[in-house]
Amino acid sequence: MASIEMNLNAWPVREVRSILLTDRTTRKNIIFATDSYADKGPEYGAKNHITAQALQVLDICSRVLKNSEEQQIRTRKKAEVFTPAWMCCMMNNHADTVWFGKEDVFGHLEGTEWVPSTEPVQFPKRKKWQSYVDARRLEITCGEAPYLTSRYDMGTGEMIQIAQRIGILDRKLRIVSENAQDEVEWLKWAIRSLQAVYGYEYQGDNLLIARVNLLLTFAECLQEHLQRDATRKELREAARIISWNIWQMDGLKGTIPMGTLYEQNHQMSLFEMEHAEMDRQDDAIDSIPCRIYNWRSKKKSVEFNAFRGGKNGTMKFDFIIGNAREVFGLTTRNRINKGFPGHTPLFLCPEIRAVRHRMAA
Figure 1: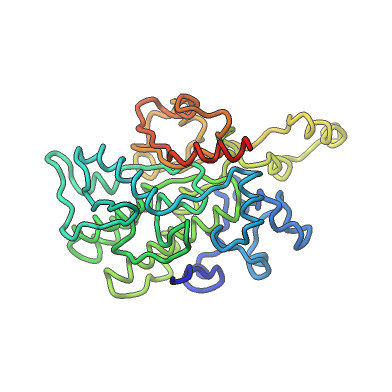
Figure 2: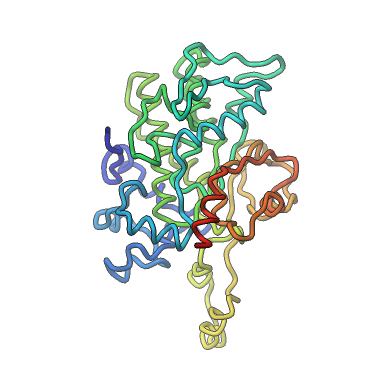
């Protein structure tokens, strides 16, 4: 089995590492939002920022490479589970069946084995390939973003060849490669592919890995199709989009996790300082609402909560997909739909039932 290929301190990640660590809402770095690294030093606690220096010290790796005890702790505390590639494929197939109006557009599953189609994807009348690339899709509580890109199987850690990948971004880039007439057109629509995939995650290490996976997917597909490495300018443009579209958020509140960054962005009065501890206990500290970017229309950032409340009429997601572990315990389909416009198709992985059983045990 080929091991996961991901080095956070090597090219191409090294070229854009500072961008991938950026939280666009706070304009600071993302935070750990997990105590998994606290034993390495106080600067690696849950409320601390992830820095480039930290990546030189810490072994931030995929869940599948963590020891079983750490996996169990993270499952127990955050209901963290990662979905095998075949299940992500099945769910993405459902979404594409709705979009295309027919099944098995990109290939088919034989048991848990994915058999991709060898012929170029054919589009129905009145739908263009550019519309598929531009269709916005959101993976909720995305972890390492297995629904968005399948560089490796989240269940086994086995690397997956580009032709065999089943993620949302993988499929968009396949469409671009099948239809773009030259390098300029390929780059234009590859960038638009990145602009149309979104995901949010609570824990900072998972978020960073998800961002790296999208960047590497872009770089690997560029190298395969254009037969050259991505330039620094291309990597920076891709990383900027990814740092907006894959963001850190408490999915229940629509805010930065833990509510601690309010203190870093707000000059507290003496009265506030005296009562800060009491406020923490009462969970009364204001949290920062997360912002996402609308790459079409007016090209500006918008509050995610305004979008969820239906107050933002200029932007919507065509599909929402993933494992709803952050809203576990409070969730039914209606609980999820309450947070998103009612017309948005929602695809929740059935694995959540297994999570509910384990959490209750």
